[in-house]
Image 1 (cartoon, rainbow, N blue to C red):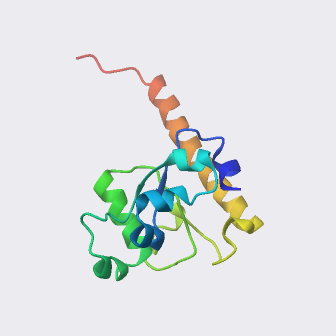
Image 2 (cartoon, rainbow, N blue to C red):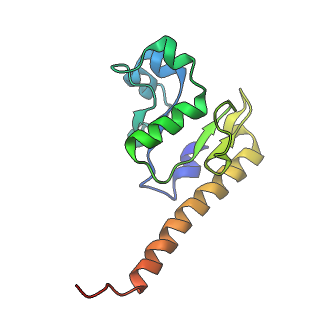
Length: 139
């Protein structure tokens, strides 16, 4: 389902925010994704095994882990899909909550995720189009 939802957005990349990375390591967590197309989109994780202490990391709410990664890497467009709620307060437009054990198996979650992706990419494309209509100022 995730592959289908992401298909219209070939430039979209995935960042893992999961305890799998701290337990298994990035490569093993990446390789556990069932499809090569999803693995190819995966470019990072919010857990940094070289810089993050596991005990400290586990004490940070998931939403704050995501926000920290976004800030550190200057990410402008983002959308988190998570079954945890902690730390996502105030970032609801950048987060889709799903039920533990159900995830994207829930049709309502699929629809919300798809609509947020579409809005995110349409806004970016609309801004690019608007920018192309505005003439540059003379130097």
